[in-house]
Image (tube, rainbow, N blue to C red; front, top):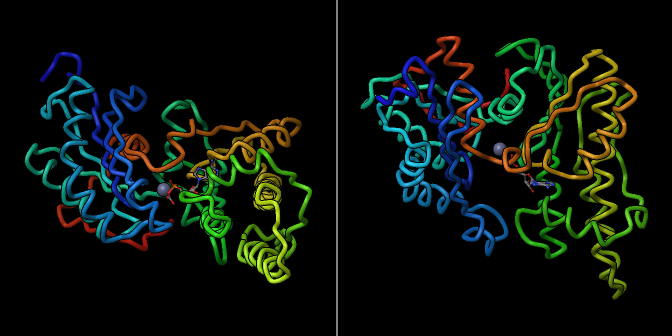
Length: 342
Ligand code: KG4
Ligand code: ZN
């Protein structure tokens, strides 16, 4: 054991829930000693989305090298680790099983605790990496490829889901429209860059606000409206401007996210908002919220774009707080593909 890590908490975080194999080493909750990601995007791009069978095989091939690199970059030995944190759900079952099995093997061999991390909590904890001073209560807007949630956090592990999508997640809708516009995968960043050349007022796509005061979301209507617009233009032999579609669609999604978040802030009177998940990397969402919240004295916090999408650092960070609470996982920890937030 190196003297640097004596009496210190050093967590190895492993994330393999979808198509990124990632590992990170975190010292005392804030010093990120290393962070390695092997992306499979290029492999899945030709299929227009993640192919689960291929994803799990790729994780199987790469996890060992990714963990090894994370240790080397951190200039640590395996014996320096205090615990291994791993995503056990939600996600693709084959992908999750690779990470869970790897983490179990490592923790068992090293005789250190295993920490089972909910991927959704991991996304939210990405905010604590650079802002360990965050104070509860917090409101979290979690927007990813599979989830759109507004969550009230009263303390570590003490939270309540205030609203969630009733159909598509925001990222899922962005990915779908990017695909039909021929922009590629993942769609969110492609829509964002295409939108920069377009006019967000060119199309008036619907904003589903649901019942008054509801904090649930629905993005299937706006998605269908874009698809119908494209189809009817195609049938008339018209070519629509893809940049205008991207800009108007992005604005419709962001508009709903921002309006719902403001309602949640008003209802809860919470003064800190954290953004999490891949869609939290979206520039328009960040800028609009920053502008809209400036007069409400709400502190807005979001991770750097790299830590919004799937990464091992967020799992190590969530693991650190779980370690402090002594909340260790049993050796029977299993992958739970449909794991939700309680
Ligand atoms: O959190 P994440 O990496 O994976 C899940 O847990 O789902 O989120 C991926 C989602 C994808 O739908 C992707 O298109 C979207 O996040 N995304 C973005 C941006 N970067 C990633 N959406 C909008 N703007 C972005 N810059
Ligand atoms: Zn994710």
